[in-house]
Image 1 (cartoon, rainbow, N blue to C red):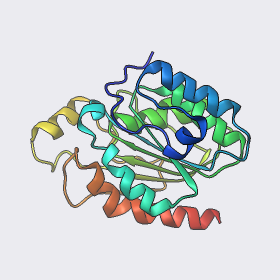
Image 2 (tube, rainbow, N blue to C red; image 1 turned 90 degrees about the vertical axis):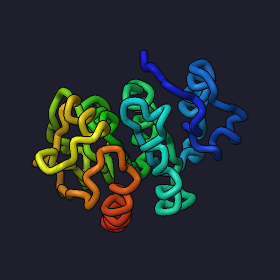
Image 3 (spheres, helix red, strand yellow; image 1 turned 120 degrees about the vertical axis):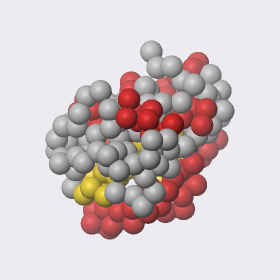
Image 4 (cartoon, rainbow, N blue to C red; image 1 turned 45 degrees about the horizontal axis):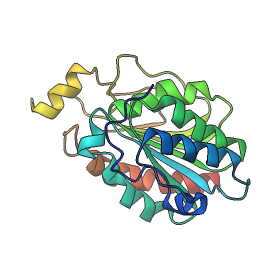
Length: 218
């Protein structure tokens, strides 16, 4: 079972919460939302963007801070979700629902959340096509693997031999950062070598990559 650190963030699209007459402030309400999503008519879900945070993101909101920028970049046609790094089963369930409808799929993860998407979510759903995967300095005990279901993969990473020995960077070092990922289509190094700066990494490289990836799909 996933350990959700906080339900204070808006985890599910407000549009769907209103349509289903639900809120999500507990595990029970989360389960009710997922059942409603499974049972919803096929024309209710839009396209999918899911942002997954790293360890303690439920408290610190580093990946959650991306949601405003992501919404501005993608527009109204996308349902934007937020999940924490260990919510594998629920994330797979959401992804499966949108994938079976043939919707556009965008996944963005930071730190442990990035490695969770690439190692625990996507390999379990090889038939779901993902238009864009953005991993922001992924960290995890297991390394990356090829993801043939992903059309475009951007990996933004910090070269830790050059990065400062700050608390945030040292935590990432202990978690085993992936750094350069040869399986990705594109690898980029951010100008600020700060593991916690998920929003900065996204703004520097992820936003443009996302636009281009969706244009190529069109």
